[in-house]
Image (cartoon, rainbow, N blue to C red; front, side, top):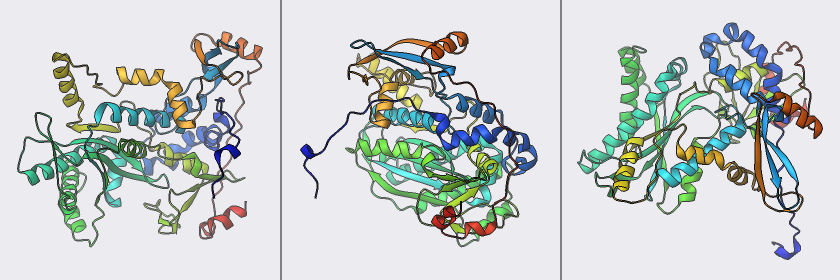
Length: 464
């Protein structure tokens, strides 16, 4: 039985600066990344492709994320004079869990407020066979073709059902490259209007459709893409089509009502989430190995094992990684500079929204829309709303004074680019300066015995 509210003591929550270096992932990167980069060509090049410059850039920025020595904003309370420093973030995608989450929140707010119309929406998930995934790992430009193919087939099916070629759905798609255990698993998550829009903006709902037409078109378009690129042959296509289960799949079971905008926002956050989660790093063993848990408790068959891996085909809901192997898995999901993962199509495309905004402006109707992903008015507004982001994630107000509960405000910014001496003096005066740690030489990796992955996870962890 629930206790009455008056019997509970609620303590106010105040913002406290996070300590990134205390996270297990930060320790892994700090201790092992240099060694990972050194051995990459010989140890990982054949499986993961050439070493991309984006990996080192992401790692260097991540190590400095949240470090006061890299600059900060000064926040002060006008009521009591209390002040504090807020460190800058690295803004790295798909590698820094904290900064990626901020991007996810920005995206979900953006599509909810600026993109989606108040109509029913459906989630589509398009997956491809394991045999074909390797082509997308070695040619990342092909990843951008997958959401385009998904949109084309949805549009074709919707238009065929209505018998009209002048109507289009609205779609926001994200290319996910990861599976539950951070392995390579490229697939498309899409949020699609459960109907189409006419040229004048009228929405036409559709009846519930069978999944077979979408699946057949998806298989056909992916095969055609790889055939046109010269990556597979007709014999390969015929062989795979003869299988009982081709490996292609389309799921469209999730439907969101037009009035449930909160569920729509949560769905966008889910499909754009970080490739890995700090909460699922169960333990770092004394030997440096990473015990990483799957998202769901049910055992999964770990896909696409490395050549000669004795653990191939083992069913389990966790994976034990050598620290360098863990870095190899998570870094393969880092996009290159300028590589977009979220795309807009049809009625929700940048061009379509821009044209509607222009028309609305001509009619003296207030309308604001962003037409690019980077450096838009909306994204600049989001960057200025860092306090709202923190409040949304941690349920604390960073501008609430911990001394008197008054309202604090930003009074200055100090950047490390040309003020290193000033930063050091300020932090030492405030007793916040921490001398940079010298990294120890990388340890020689230790191989985990094959038998250790067969025992239950609780028993396995108890052995360390």
